[in-house]
Image (tube, rainbow, N blue to C red; front, top):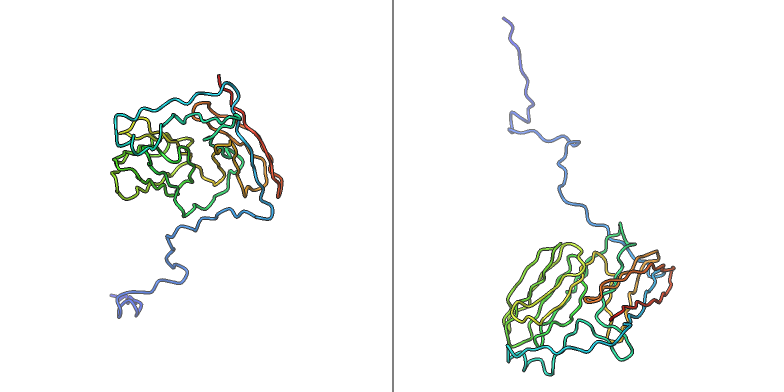
Length: 255
C-alpha cells in the first residue's frame, strides 16, 4: 500500500494562518468624495432685475390677532396681510426668483451657514426664504408665546414642532429640491411663510423695491422662473455671457 504524503505550508501549520496575497488586498468601502462644480470668477456673470405689478394696487387687509393678546402686544403695530406687497410705484416684493433649468449635471457645495427663520411679533421673518438641499434651516422664536412651525412639504418630509418662549433654535434639513414649501404656525392661523429648496445657490427674493440680484452665475443659457404666492409663476429664457451682466423684468398682472 502506498502512502501519500500531504504537505501543508509551514506558515499555516506553525502559525495557524497564511498571509493574503498582495493582489488580493481588501478593498476600501469608503465612498468617493463628491466632485463640486467650481465657478470661475473671471467668467461668472450676474442677473439682476425688478418685479412689477400691473393693475389696481391691492389694499392691504388687516390681520386679526386678538385671539392672542400677547401677539397684539408683541407685533408693535397694526398687522396687515403680506401675501401681495406692492409699493406706490407698482414694485412687487416677496417674489422668489430662481434658475429653473440650465445647471443640470453640476453639483454645488452645500453652504455651512444656516438659513434662519425668526418668529417675531407672531410673524414669520422672512416670509419668503431660499435654501439649498442639505443646508441647515434654523428656526428661532423671539416671541414671549409658544409657536408651532409646520412646513407642509410634499417632496420632502413634512414636520411640525412646538417651540416655546426662550426655547433653543430648531434645526432641520431638506434633502430634495422643492418649490415652494408652505409654512404655517398651528397655533396662530395668520402666520405664513414659504421656503424654496434648490440644489444650487442661484436664487433671490425681490425686496420692497421689487429688485433682485443673482450673482456669480456661470455663463450659459437658462430658464429663470419667478414665483409669487398669489399670482403664480412666470418664466424667461436668459443667456449669461462670460463676465456679463444681464438685466430683466417680470410683470405680474392683478385684477
